[in-house]
Image (cartoon, rainbow, N blue to C red):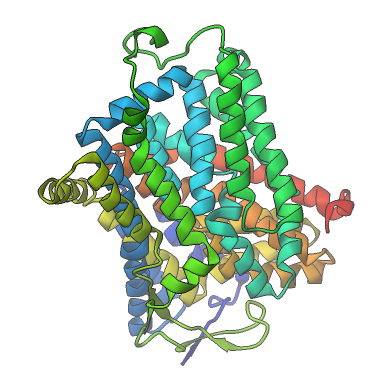
Length: 542
């Protein structure tokens, strides 16, 4: 047994500085050196290993097993989601059906600004709510590239758009986990997040279009931005406050998709906006081929089947059935070998280390089954099916290094207590803690790539610290989730998924630089909002 030590250098600030070395390494390599993702990931993993062993005195074998457990999770289920999502997209391209999809979207709108709202914001939010864990960025970014978007913008826009739904992603799992680790009422956490995120959600469509096209072009589509943001935010508030954490994303995104589609049938911007350098100023709807209903349904069938499978996999009765064959493999040399102590844990507790091989219930499996049905409808035989799958795997060899390396880094930082040192340092800010509670969530999602994991990592610390500074713990635990969403767009795991989906492998540094300032600005906004709710707008706390 090895007990975590959160102040190994005898001073919390110095210990937190040591714990931040892997983060500094990955920030430096991605943002300044623009290094490929696999180089940054492996370098940060090595730095975390050395700090854990040399500074935190974590046993070598225990550190190694923590890294291997993270690497295993990076391969399955995370990489499994990425490869199956991009495989479905590649199949539609190889069969020529994506041209039909592209033209059918252009009949709704051939304006890049409005296409970004429909796919990056609305459809991406739907996928986040139904599956989460990288699925929305992998699919929606790939679709935008297929439509003709600049790959960097496609990836960056999908990452930023994904801010709005992340806290309720994967059928509300982040909020449910926050309730489990803190012992607080899950419904109250859901309500509090639902009184924070809608303010961000209503603003994200404007943010996206401003980033794409500038102020003047944003004002041209102001009505569409309002329709998208308000329809999403209103349903997000209502469902999170009155129905629970499971449905906000699905209901909000469906409302947004329907509202935008109906609105765009009767309203058009004064001019069609395209990226500088694109061929032609606009694509007139009259010049597009016309398709029969059967052709349209066939072309869209992979994404329709994907949507149905993802929803099916999230239903409680189905989930109970497909979770049954899950294998729990206790990691030797790590399971119950690390003890968490106060203030991270209420009482000393041995950290479990069970690798769950949920081969059937994983979202990637739902996508793979969807790919089989899609192949049957698209007329893709077994030989061609495996040929496209092989090409997809070859396309993703570098992300197969990057994603596991990043997960290995996250698991070392969690089991060694390095993440906890950083958390305790932020928790020592006294009455300013409500502001920094959002940054704690940001840090957790940056490290793990998951709002769920960030809530598991820092949820209890948020609750304990809030009580110490005299703030309602419901607020700070909710802020962990709301602030966490702002870190998703720069999480190395998310960056790796986005670059894999858009053909930007090796350009992870460029994408990181594209999103980092937006991440920091949104984190400040959530932090200020949380501070105001703690001391001035306390009536908003349920």
